[in-house]
Amino acid sequence: GLMITFCIGNLMLKTKRGKLKRDVHAPVWSVLLGMALVSLGLLSTITKEPSVVRVFGIYYTCSLLITAVMFSRKQVLKMIYRMVLGMGISEKFSNCCRSTTESFLSSLEEEASLLNARPLIFLTKGCASHVMNKAIIYISENEDTQYIKFVHFLNPEKDLPPKIESAVRFLDRVYPKFKIDLVIVEGEFSPANVRFLSQLLDIPRNRMFMACPSKELRQTVASLGGVRVITH
Image (cartoon, rainbow, N blue to C red; front, top):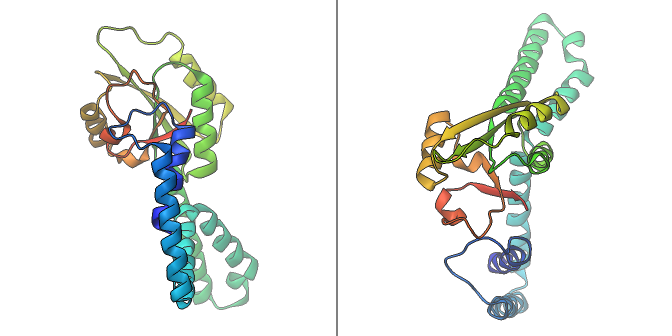
């Protein structure tokens, strides 16, 4: 099942991220052939040992639940908070129980605030406000923060894009629930500078995003150490 998922992911990258620079190129026919062979192996295993399906289903369901909770932590916290409030424990029971419940609710609020305050970085090449807007929409729908830092690497031999500051200010007004900053880093866009930025701001590289790079980019996305591509 995992190998089939890799094949599907490879085909999706070819169609949706065709411009990405790659060190290894796998022809479509080889990916389809590999997926067909793996599927045949999986079917033969299921035919020989049907109990494998039950074991796989248990592990898959548990993994899916854990992953869903991790990706929806803020929603889970809100749900627990509303459930506790709806039960009215602080009003029905003793002072001890009331103080414990209030302390628990306060800890939920604090955890939710910490999630919202954890910054994400979007590496922007220029002042394309529509690309930055797509990034904000993606982050609002898929991430658990309300703090975004747009980072632009400024080549010493080039000028700052003239409208990048006004674009970020505009987006900051359009999205009042988000805190949106602009960070200018003097230096070329490179894996070493991305790593330095991660250490300087104490933000792991897997919490950094970028638009799908053009073929002009000399480095591969893999060399950036976990930076994620989220827009075309």
